[in-house]
Each structure stands twice: as C-alpha cells, then as structure tokens.
Amino acid sequence: MSHAELPAALHGLMAEFETPTALVRAAEQARLAGYREMDAYSPIPIEELNEALGLRRTRLPKLVFLGGVIGGTAGYALQYWSQAMAYPMNIGGRPYHSWPHFIPVTFETTVLGAALACFVGMWALNKLPQPYHPVFNVPEFARASLDRFFLCIESTDPKFDREETARFLAGLHPVGVSEVAP
Image (tube, rainbow, N blue to C red):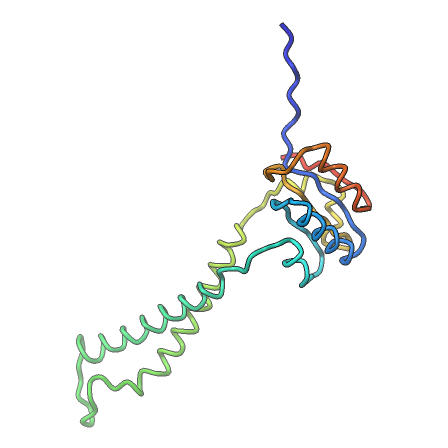
C-alpha cells in the first residue's frame, strides 16, 4: 500500500516589492481578486494600505474613550467617597460635595484611564508580544525594516490555492515570491 505524500504545511505566500506604490497596487488587485486573509509589511507607514487591504477601522478609539470615562468616573467617585462619606470634614463652611474642587483630579484620572486603555488596547489588538511570526522564516523578510515592501496572502484564505495564488502573485510583477513556512 503506498501512501500519498501530503504537501508541507504552509502559512502563506509572500511577494516582495521595491516601492510602496507597487505594494498598494498589489494589495488592491489581490483584494479585487477575492483574497481577504492577507497582510502587508512595510518599513514606513502607508496610509493607502488600509483601504487597499480592505481593513476595517480599529476599535481602539472606543476603548480609549471607555478607559477615559471609567478613569474619570473612578477619580470623581473616590473623591466623593473620601470627602463626603468616609471622612467628612466641614472646613470653612464648605459643602462636603464640592464638585469644583474635584475637577483637577477628575481630569487627571480621565487622562490616566484613557492612556492606560490605549496602551493595553494597542498591545491586545496587535496581539503583542509576539516574538515569533512565520514571516520571519523567509530570509528576504530581513529587508522589511529597511527598504522592501511585502504582501503575504495567508493559506487560511478561502480562495487560497498554492499554485494559483503563486501565479497570481507572480503576475503582480514582484521582485520575488516566497513560500512562508509555519
């Protein structure tokens, strides 16, 4: 009985480009061709790339707003509890709940809550820390932080077919196409 040899596992196929314009054009063509599970790597920020990849907007602004609201509410509540409930002191006839005096601390805790939510949210949404990623297995990827631009179509894409996707990427006129091992 012979056993058919199964193809090696594959994270995806990656095309290397020399210019940001070529990368954006390739990402647009890949999205128009029906590929959805793909990512681009660039040494510089490229604003058009999010739209070219078809990425939806991030949830980070909502997380930062929520962190600010929680921080401000917690700061105000702590001041109210400490000065009006737990340790009330009537100094100079002022009311226990003197909200104008609570504003500076409330502002600072709002900023603190928003900053912490932004910090933690960025790490969580970017799946960090991630010391290993399969694209690091491609030797050419070392230039991704210098002067090269990469488009990786992942094998989890429903339209992904090893040979067909390789032909498609080669038709985009890249510097080269590489297989990305997991």
